[in-house]
Picture 1: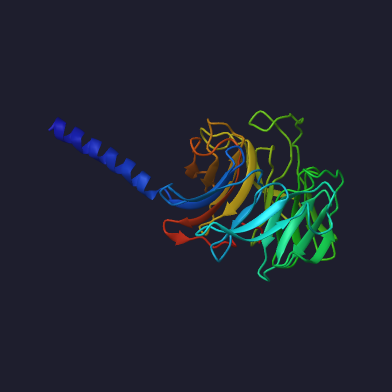
Picture 2: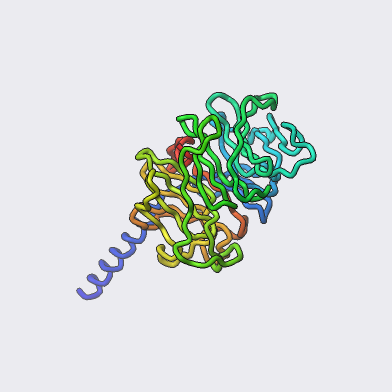
Length: 325
């Protein structure tokens, strides 16, 4: 009898473990790592569907037509057909748009519903929109207090309102600009009374924001880069939710990069420069429960900056989710 009871207990434990594994979401992702100089699509089982070489990279997108919009270095953006590996469009901010001879880097871009491509140029400190021929259709100047070609901006998105939501790494601020280039909203990323510490990993500290996401409730979700945190702030700058460096059991956040909100409300967070001890991408619920982790230092490295979830359990994730709405 005792043996039968023990067998039933063991079967119950095995069932629970199998159920937990079965309920973990399976994501198809687009991701890139600058240290391994690779950009890739991984299917929901983690197999490589497609990959290509890249170099420095701070933004990427899968477009509705299935093509990949990404950068091959700090100035060149390409649209590539992953089926044929044919480059169907390119723009080089170092050679086009009147930037010849200027110090310029690109850290954000976006294909707009109009077909134009928005490009944020650090150095010239401007946002341009270019057509398929590479001609500038519109542009606005950015307000930058501490100009630097590597730090003027990180991720930038055009909102449905026509405004632009801009992460200014060097200024430690998120600014919203209207179509005239006027700042209509600003949030200064706090240091929470702490002193800055150099570096990129878990040991560093700062407020160099990487991404900002405008939520449907009007609040803004932002990643604080080397601040190791994610904040949700109201239009008046009040923090109503935050995720800090050691809030997730067994995980430390380092340079928090990309943010994506899935249809179920969960957040997918990039955890760059966190070393092999920590996952590179994490999905959490709003009550800070970890439901999925990406941890692959065999194929990718410590500079996995950008990730986009493309589908979950066979269901395509709307590409408008997880970008600044």
